[in-house]
Image 1 (cartoon, one colour):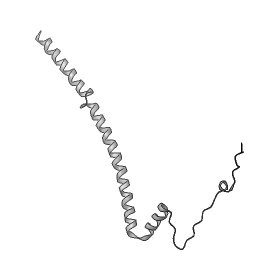
Image 2: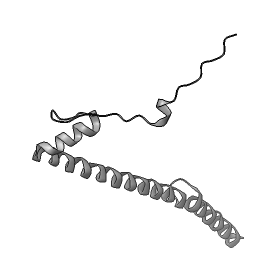
Image 3: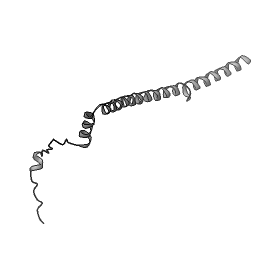
Image 4: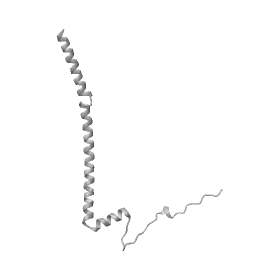
Length: 104
């Protein structure tokens, strides 16, 4: 009788421990979730590292000379030099007249 009770208690303990290992938040499922979070954070860190590298290169270019600053002003602000001419070329759609709406 004592052997059956001991066996039953041990089986119940084994089932509880297995449930905790496989099903609880601090078991394998929790570890898998944490690994996913770590991978996402590592990817974000790689992207931010690349962004920082590009920004550092841009700062170095701006510190080195006037040409990088001029290029930035041209691309971002649309500025032109004092000895340059600015032309706007209109496409065929801009030169055709649109018909007036009929009067009612």
